[in-house]
Image (tube, rainbow over the protein chains, first blue to last red):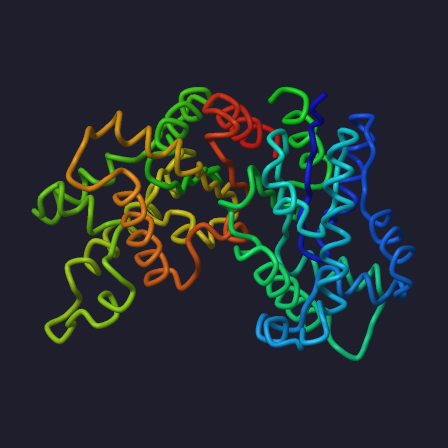
Length: 194
Length: 194
């Protein structure tokens, strides 16, 4: 039986994970986000914080390209390979929502996949991460810009395509303009009627 | 009174204009596409084909930057300025759908504007333009690649941002995957309920 998968790529601070969870709840299917992280932690023995960073961010595309691989794949390559296998396995076994971790690219050959990208403008995201993570030495804007850059570099290195480019997704939504509930409705409706 | 505007940016061959017209019809408002073109032809005396090309395409961002402006603005600059004024005037006067011509950027200060981008995969677009324009010496794929490049360069030069980057729009839709009617439904619903 073929399973229908929704992948949700998202910027930090735009409630992409919340949207993914609500969509899954509405549709009565599972949403995978931290579960993939936990599984990689379990299999590699790396710390949770390390896997969280190394599974979606890289400092620059050059640092990823020139990381020494003379003794085999880098830790990041190991994590990439593990998360790819986990995501392919999930898609093989059940209809579900998968948040982040380049699932849109990893499932590019999976024929029944709805690829979503969630974003919002900087003001909305700044407010959101300040509420969620509190204040740090760096301003929310600085933190978001760094994270966007690192996530884009990671995506570029492993997928050879551009993160956030509309053509890579079936639908992209501005959660700041549309609101969480409207995003959830549109995505759930697509899942049901497409 | 404030008017609600829908701007539809689109790739060639993905039925963006048809979607814009159907949305307008469903909502009982006007859709502006060729009307803007006709008005510029009337005001400048340039030919229709020339305005059609020069109002959305440029050969490369370098050719746009280095075009000689020693005797004043280029023809392309004149068309840009005219179409900007026309689009601002439309938004001032009525709720409507505006297709193409960087209206999303031109209306960046208009607070009640829903910015849409429509795209589709290459196979769908190739089929569509072969049906619509017939065969030429260049293959449909070549023609689309050239047009995408020229449209992106035009957009980049006049707006300083990236054409097709999800963050520039409130919603982007793959009309090949979703189908015309589903795109029309989603956009009309946003107009009504946002």
